[in-house]
Length: 328
Image (cartoon, rainbow, N blue to C red):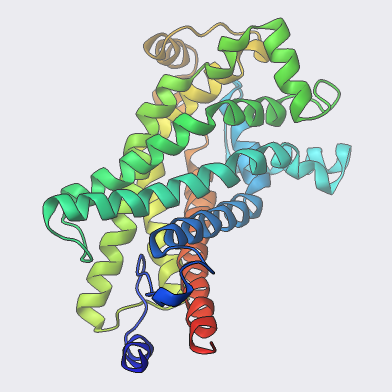
């Protein structure tokens, strides 16, 4: 057992690695596979919470422009933020963030955990267990993880969008949003915009995870270091967020329009119909890509923070377990 401990002390910790647990203490702790899942859930939850809170004011501003016909510009976005601050105070810039946390914590936890599990399953299926996946399975793992998380948490995303674009007098809290939507618009409204969400999350999550994992793999091959530094992770995550969000942005606009139709006076029935209406009223670039420049600011920041927080928390949890194991 002593040799096993020394070996793990000398071997660098890598993402997804599970340290062995002594057989005589199985009853005292979680099994390795279960511990890996729990660590991924905790790391993902923290990653999502920190990332979304950091960019919440920009995210709220982007949603407001996405669901309205007002022309977007950096100057108008600044004016909106400033007017909101003057009218309702500094904390109003984070209105809807409580709903965001209720959604993003389980969403991020499920997405990161599912990604780890899909990587393990696909690695075993394609014969790359414990190694970096080839490009296609790497893209597939990210897409499947994002789809899984979106399917399980979608009503919370609807609630968050409603709270972001309505005055605080309309909905007092998250439960109130659920109750009013169910009573006045029907339960199926909680899933309005679900299809464009899934269609958008496939390229978004797939490209985000694919880009981040690919950049880490290329870094390891060229630098000889198995783990990048924290600032390098931030850069890799920023690139992943920029590519993923740009690819899926029109569907994000469609999703927001469909989610908020009940409070904006519009009626959007289908994805193509919504796209057609947006293009007819506002044009392709000013409509379907409205607010994209803001996404190029907030997206890389949020995704960079998210991926970096997840990786660093995973490493920290594994080191804490190793320390606890060595001190027995």
